[in-house]
Length: 593
Image 1 (cartoon, rainbow, N blue to C red):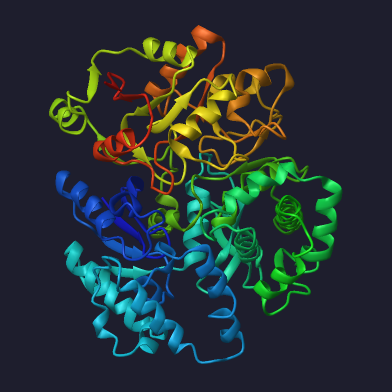
Image 2 (image 1 turned 120 degrees about the horizontal axis):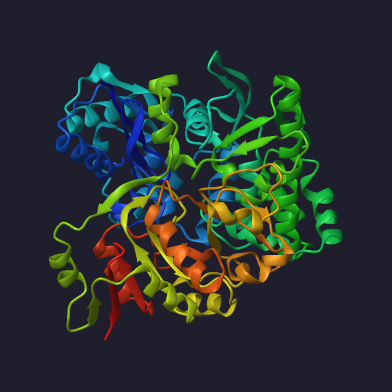
């Protein structure tokens, strides 16, 4: 029996545990710290994995970090925990990147960050005092690796020589392949992100006969360009890129084309399976800031989305020419762009596409486990891998977090009764079993509603979510009924809301609240009875009542907070919002007095 622990210690840090080739646990540090996209060393996530080992009397064989070149400075001072949009403009402009490109001394900027971050709690756990100067903390990656190795060795009671550091994009690639719900036939794997271990795009051949990295580049700036565009549109980079994607359908094609040709098209090109520089300037922030001034926000969003789709479509085409394979797996931060994935899925060169859940850096910890274990690994069947709300001590927990003087707790509530609440226009938070890993709620920590009525979107936003008015919600649909609602001639499976689909006109009115209202696309979760029987049963009861085999689904969290993990989180969300019902473990229905 082999037991491996994978660790991601960067942006949105996480830990994952593999036993005999199967991922048993995967958790993000944000769920413990309550800091969204928590960056740095994931101590609590590792502790959670160690608890599983203790409960099952297992011993670790190896531990692996999912990136080799890490800067200790950004782990010690994670600016994304507190930077505002204005701070990011300074960071990309006159305060940091501008002077850096000019070769100026940045010591004063680093000292400013140190003084500001010291005013807030970072809880980094690591002893950064071993670095004598700020310059050492920034540049001495060897010493930072030793610091990480020594700390995790003590935390996990494992020998130093059993702690490894693995290549960033190789971890992305293994996650892309084994994190997909697919068979083990050979396929192309493409990883694409902002940066990691010196690269930002790779092309691989993955098959039982071999794994081979065929192409790689450090010039694929798709992620960076999208990030800076997000900032210029007044939103936070590394967090709100999905809002830019959601705005894209509102733009008119003729205006989008003008921005695309004038601003984005000249920047990059695709050659021999690599996205590389074309007329890309040294200072992307200054270039985009100036070039985008004449254009309106929606047309900018449409243009940067078109930029991504055109480049990726050409990359896919060239990749097939190189390998002869028409099956694709994607990972890396750019794989989170569900509209891009829809465009790729419709290409004639593509027979099948697999995009696993949350391909951003949080999934690197899982990829590290797959990389260590190689082709003895088992494909990931689902992502219900986190904290488990069990029926053990449930009565006392409910009294603690949902006190009787404030709540009505009904026991023995069936799926059919909850389905009737949905049919009557009600909104219910469903909380059951193990939490989902990644950015998407998949029924175990979800807010659910009837997808027939678009008015429910306004109600949910006013109650709890406070989402931007142009952003769509998602849809959970019974897998066996999906073909009646989506155009999907290739039979592509979407279990993690990672792919966009065009909807069929005949049944669109039944699910319109769970789609994008402007272009009628949807990012569905195909709910399998095999992988989440209780959630499937709940949807099926709603289907019996209404003829609609799906529910509107959005994550259970307050705006700016991570998805709820435990009952304490659920209680906090319940009492700090107007959410009317919480349905726990398919038995207890809680409402406010």
